[in-house]
Amino acid sequence: MLVTGREILQDAHKNNYAVGAFNVNNMEIVQAIIEAAEETNSPVILQASQGGLSYAGVEYIAELGGKLAARNAKVPVAVHLDHGTDFDQVMLCIRHGFTSVMIDGSRFDLEDNIAITKKSNRSGSCSRSICRGRIR
Image (cartoon, rainbow, N blue to C red; front, side):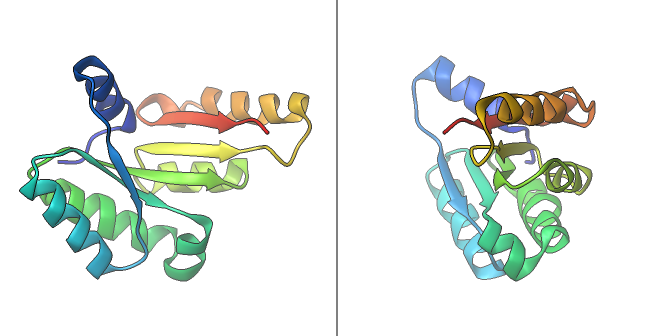
């Protein structure tokens, strides 16, 4: 079942367990991760790295991970953008159904990093997704 990153992490915190987050690039990797999560009855986070997005594309990962694998899984599954490069990429992933995003503004000075992270969180698109930032 497709859920937000927030839902998974809140339950993990409440019940004191860790959640695996795995980079996905193709169908076989997604299938293996979902199969293992179901066998162990464990929530899981499917995440897209910059390499995965370059290789497969946002739409492919969103369709395969979020709309197909996660919605058909017997365990909670979030689809996460890992180390998003800019505001536009974050918004694109959210529009395609990612339920968790991380904007990596660590290449900016602290003030600009905070500004881009706040912009992402205030966009309104993050109401269902969890948005977080990275500080160097």
